[in-house]
Image (cartoon, rainbow, N blue to C red; front, side, top):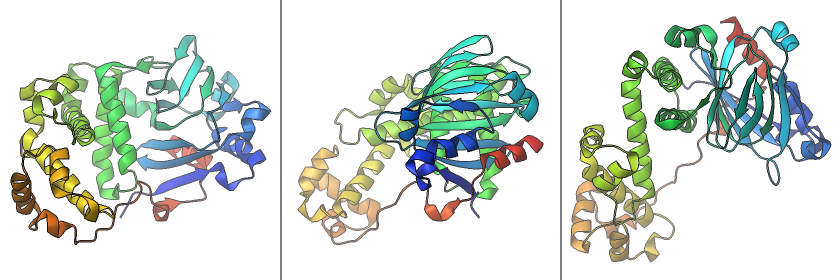
Length: 347
């Protein structure tokens, strides 16, 4: 059974009403204001799910033209009335924020991660864009970090990059996450957050297996991007990741080694291309060369060993291509951020 996803989109509202619909939902967290012209361009989609005690949200900007700016505020009066006692950890994929968090200056660029303490004041301007957000109860995070001032903290450096990788991986898998997997993902996420926000011996030791997994995911992503590069090798990957080759080899110890994994991914790519709509127009020798194989004979031999049929036979097969990350059938409409936050606040 899959973990339920809750969705909200302003697309269903008339253009002139979209921002107001969004403001009604976001008012559970922030007071927000926008110019009339910017409001007409506003269009946003949000998917959320619970991962244990934390709430994950994936926001997607769907407006026309350049993303708009809007003001966000948490006043003393709002804080006293809503009693939210959570950390709000935001990866701004294409979103940024500038202003003040309490007494601290807050300024981020796209791809930065920043932290807000929802029990503290905020007055800033946001440039709308895609985001991944983790909302975590204070006591849950304080149990790992102690009582730290994180309001307005911007997470950068290698550990920030690894946390961003982990958050992106969560987004990719949000529609596949089974309820029985949630406790493990929850613990892994808390360990990664703790290591990135307060790197120390205990938090790093707790996060070590999850850091290794993030490094492995990053290496896999680089391999996928460079399958047609003749320079792709263990040495080039180690250099790009800033790792020793010995550390890289350990990461791939259960993947038949670095070279074995690269060859496997190249064979899978070749199989996909040969079975695509244009596969019958693809010269096998050209494809083999593009994917780094030195000869047709070697390519054909390892291809048949991998799949049980030859490259030419692959072109006779029909394969359905995978679809998008989040499937409409997995979504639960009737979204209310207010109700969701009330529930997480009462836990």
